Amino acid sequence: MSNMRLEKLSYWGFNFTKNAPNIILDSGSLFFRRNLLRQKPDSTKLLVGTHHKVLTVFLGRVFRCFAIASGRTAVQGKGAQIDYTKDILLDHHSQYDLTKLNDAPYVGIHVIRDPRDLLVSCAFYHQKSAERWLHVPQDRLGGKTYQQHVNDLPTMEARLLFELENSGGENLRDMLAWDRTNQNFSELRYEDLIGPRSVDLFEQAIMHWPLSAGERAILMQFYRYFSLTGPGVKGNKHVRNPTSGQWRNHFTPAVEREFHTMFPNSINDLEYEA
Image 1 (cartoon, one colour):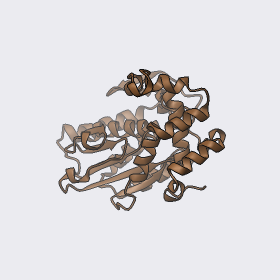
Image 2 (cartoon, one colour):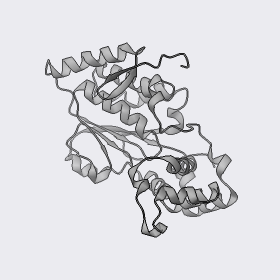
Image 3 (cartoon, rainbow, N blue to C red):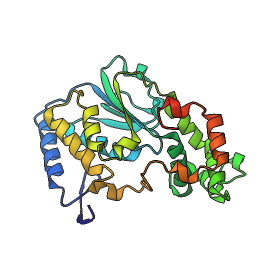
Image 4 (cartoon, rainbow, N blue to C red):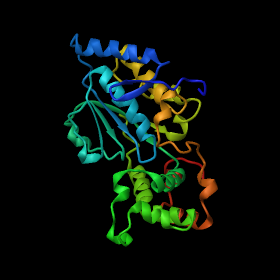
């Protein structure tokens, strides 16, 4: 991928490299059939559940582009904030209120990550991110913003302990609260979706979705393009270090004790190795 030309073509607010014409032409063809020929897509809703620092930006790009190409509407949000009348619902905390679907048919995917790596990723991300909530002064932090407080902590150990009690811990609770018995969702792992079998596993997860052959093909093209090995990852500033097992380099005995005190069954519940 290092030899790819970086000149950009802009479509629908997304930038595509000039050596990716097929995805643009195929998307335009599908868009034409859907919108100009008035071919309506299947009414089954598509739900994409992620968590903070668990491929939210990547899958958001994939499905927002797919929504436009396939003549669907898409919304990204959290729980009750989501407009459940839309066709594609992306919840970045996986807090869906499925009663708001009013018995509409739906299929979906849900992605988890090793909670220890999620905690480490949060600690690094919150030091530099421009997300608005990180820059609001908080009385409980002595008037500092969340980011200022994190950056003023003297060590990575201190940052991880702080994250356990704050945003990082909240994200872990969201992930552990998910109902993994819901058969409408295919369960996926962050670690697999950044690995060599990423494309195959994603394709298997959506194989039963009620999509036309053309829709499935263009969805897979967007997935390949924006994936961590595709040219579209160039513009993803949320990616720092996607590798798994980073916690081994950052967990001190104090962090490990506190982690297992606060989330004693998380590793077993999510079926990760201790």
